[in-house]
Image (tube, rainbow, N blue to C red; front, top):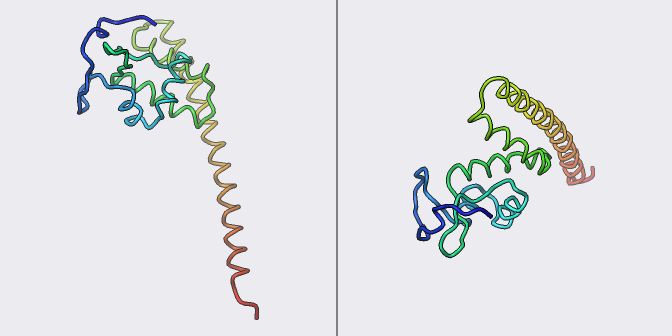
Length: 150
């Protein structure tokens, strides 16, 4: 893994939410609502790279790193693959620095992700409606059978 000049800085334990502040993986996991194991998995998959490492080798994350993790976390329940997650993150990164026709192509790709996400949200809503209907049916059965026979 590539090193940064911040690797030689002392390990940082800072509270608050200042931009540029470094936090260890445990705090990053807590802040984003992911497990440490999941963050390590996403690192191995190339979705996230810690911004720095402490002298002791601890992963150190910044607010932009947490933003990337939040994108991945929100894609997961919609069934996006790791490759799709990586692709979207690449598009989002490139949009910050790209202009002209290349930017238009990136916006088209982003629109495709939006369409896919919207389609998947609709499917999940349909599944939820079906599940709620089933739960209501079970509740009606309980109510029916709890009444004493006449």
